[in-house]
Length: 289
Image (tube, rainbow, N blue to C red):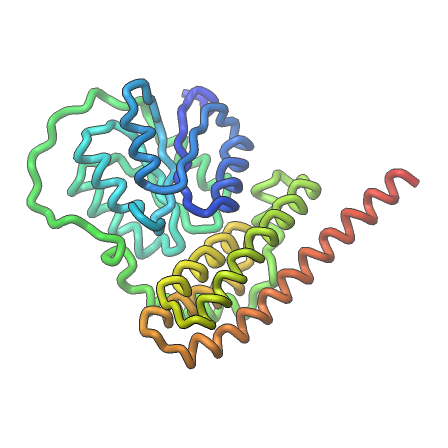
């Protein structure tokens, strides 16, 4: 079955990251794509009487109903749909995804580590076969899996992530090139959208830190982390991951220290984006001269 014939549902709470995912799906040839901002909205879409979704591409870490709870509801409703999960921790989550697939009987095509690379997404989409009629499943006594189960082992992987991030450029140009197919104008458009989204989330993070709002610190840093990974800003994402982790322990001294690193990485990314904008302006002037 050709990708253009499949019906997709993109589930992502962050507007910028959702836009990047929709852009990638369109670039792969998808023409029938619905979008949802969280698991609850996605569940309403797939459970509508006239709904016909072939593949769901869903983030795992979302407010309200997260990706794991969403999968559980799909299983309970007996909806025959294939799922591609998007996460920051592919190796860790693969084990959890396999557990979910066995326990809930949901068809998981695979897990993609952010940033979403079009080639990887296309390869998983091509694993899809038309769904068979839904058959009754034997009852299972397996305890429900939660997102916290999937996040076990994060601390062990964090050191490795940070070591890699210290060597990373402000933005990995290969990520943008893959998303946009080498269209430099589209790359600069994405960077501009990223900066707009990042400005709002960064202001939210600063306010949360100043007011000692632990839950908002975690929420804002997670949003910036996901958006940063989406464009290949790995070092900025790593700093946000560190802030997100320390917010759980209310270690405000360490959070404040990490905010200094956050500001420095934001400056590096902003400089990269401004340089890209200048190159675009210079290219435009050369074309009309």
